[in-house]
Every structure is written in structure tokens, then in C-alpha cells.
Length: 128
Image (cartoon, rainbow, N blue to C red; front, side, top):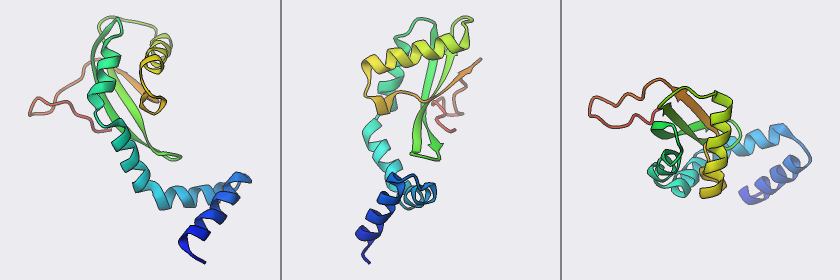
């Protein structure tokens, strides 16, 4: 059986609900998925600029975060200017991003932090 045929069998099993087949496909294509997302998102500054448009955002840093299903998703670390109910802010941020960005660029993971500290070279730390 060729690689393509094996993948086709795995896809058919996934469509029938086989979680083990899904995990095999994700494991096999994990790196390719990450590279694809990186190419699609291209510049985290685009997502950061859209988030900065929101009222009450002091600073933001966007990063890739590992995900068991897709390999990687977009995450955002946000420093607010003043207190705001966290769930309301997250909802507002997602709604704002969905209106201005492609769905795959909308942050899935949102961290609200007290302060975003730059690296020793005064760059944004995008590490997870």
C-alpha cells in the first residue's frame, strides 16, 4: 500500500469517528500543519494591530501555541489599561478579531496579564 492509500484509509476511519486514526494523522503531519499555519498567519504584528484597536488594550503579544488537534493555534497575551471583566473582554476581543481577520488568525488562547515584559534585547517574548 502506498503512503497516499494509507492516508486515505486513515481519513476514512477518522470520518467514521476513529480517534486513534485521527491521532496518527496528526502525529504524521504535525510539522507540516505548523509550517502551514506559520505561512498563513505570516506576521503576528497584523493580529497584534487588530487587537490594539480595542479600547482598554495597553499592550499585546501574539504567539503560536501547541494544540493536540491542529498542531498549533494562535494565542494572545494582553495587558489591559484598567480592570475589566475577563470573560467579557475575551468575548469582545474574539468578536472584534472575527470581524477583521480570517478565522485561522483569531486567537484561540487569550491570556490577560498584569505586565508584558520584553526580552533582555527589548523585544517581545513570543514564547509559550
